[in-house]
Amino acid sequence: MTELPRLSGREVVRALKQVGYEQDHQRGSHIVLRLSSYPHRRIVVPDHDEVAKGTLRAIIRQVGLTLEQFNELL
Image 1: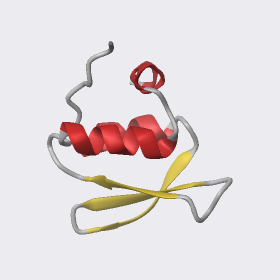
Image 2: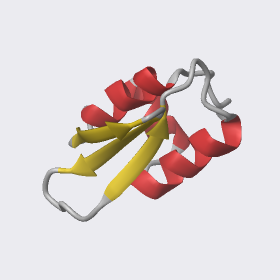
Image 3: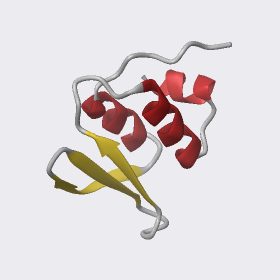
Image 4: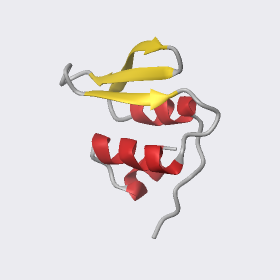
Protein backbone atom coordinates (compact mmCIF):
# COMPACT_ATOMS: atom_id res chain seq x y z
CA MET A 1 0.00 0.00 0.00
CA THR A 2 1.26 3.45 -0.89
CA GLU A 3 2.05 5.70 2.03
CA LEU A 4 0.32 9.06 2.39
CA PRO A 5 2.80 11.93 1.86
CA ARG A 6 3.15 14.91 4.19
CA LEU A 7 2.06 17.95 2.22
CA SER A 8 1.24 21.58 2.83
CA GLY A 9 -2.07 23.02 1.69
CA ARG A 10 -0.33 24.87 -1.17
CA GLU A 11 1.21 21.60 -2.42
CA VAL A 12 -2.21 19.92 -2.41
CA VAL A 13 -3.68 22.84 -4.38
CA ARG A 14 -0.81 22.62 -6.90
CA ALA A 15 -1.51 18.90 -7.42
CA LEU A 16 -5.27 19.41 -7.81
CA LYS A 17 -4.73 22.15 -10.41
CA GLN A 18 -3.16 19.50 -12.65
CA VAL A 19 -6.47 17.58 -12.63
CA GLY A 20 -8.51 20.62 -13.69
CA TYR A 21 -9.37 22.34 -10.42
CA GLU A 22 -8.83 26.08 -10.18
CA GLN A 23 -8.77 28.35 -7.16
CA ASP A 24 -12.16 29.99 -6.70
CA HIS A 25 -11.51 32.01 -3.56
CA GLN A 26 -9.89 31.91 -0.14
CA ARG A 27 -11.49 32.75 3.18
CA GLY A 28 -9.11 32.81 6.09
CA SER A 29 -7.03 29.65 6.02
CA HIS A 30 -9.33 27.71 3.68
CA ILE A 31 -8.73 27.62 -0.07
CA VAL A 32 -11.83 26.78 -2.13
CA LEU A 33 -11.19 25.08 -5.47
CA ARG A 34 -13.76 24.40 -8.16
CA LEU A 35 -13.71 22.09 -11.12
CA SER A 36 -13.86 24.13 -14.31
CA SER A 37 -16.16 21.68 -16.14
CA TYR A 38 -18.53 21.32 -13.11
CA PRO A 39 -18.80 24.75 -11.44
CA HIS A 40 -20.79 23.41 -8.48
CA ARG A 41 -18.17 20.80 -7.59
CA ARG A 42 -16.01 22.38 -4.91
CA ILE A 43 -13.18 21.15 -2.71
CA VAL A 44 -11.95 22.97 0.41
CA VAL A 45 -8.25 22.68 1.24
CA PRO A 46 -6.83 24.06 4.50
CA ASP A 47 -3.89 26.40 3.93
CA HIS A 48 -1.72 24.88 6.66
CA ASP A 49 1.97 24.00 6.79
CA GLU A 50 0.97 20.32 6.97
CA VAL A 51 -2.47 18.95 6.08
CA ALA A 52 -3.64 16.26 8.50
CA LYS A 53 -3.58 12.73 7.10
CA GLY A 54 -7.32 12.19 7.53
CA THR A 55 -8.10 15.49 5.84
CA LEU A 56 -5.77 14.71 2.95
CA ARG A 57 -7.30 11.26 2.53
CA ALA A 58 -10.81 12.82 2.49
CA ILE A 59 -9.76 15.39 -0.15
CA ILE A 60 -8.31 12.65 -2.37
CA ARG A 61 -11.52 10.62 -1.98
CA GLN A 62 -13.74 13.64 -2.81
CA VAL A 63 -11.75 14.36 -5.95
CA GLY A 64 -12.18 10.76 -7.06
CA LEU A 65 -8.54 9.78 -7.30
CA THR A 66 -6.70 6.80 -5.89
CA LEU A 67 -3.71 7.37 -3.66
CA GLU A 68 -1.38 6.18 -6.43
CA GLN A 69 -2.92 8.60 -8.94
CA PHE A 70 -2.57 11.48 -6.47
CA ASN A 71 1.07 10.62 -5.78
CA GLU A 72 1.80 10.76 -9.53
CA LEU A 73 0.60 14.38 -9.58
CA LEU A 74 3.21 15.45 -7.02
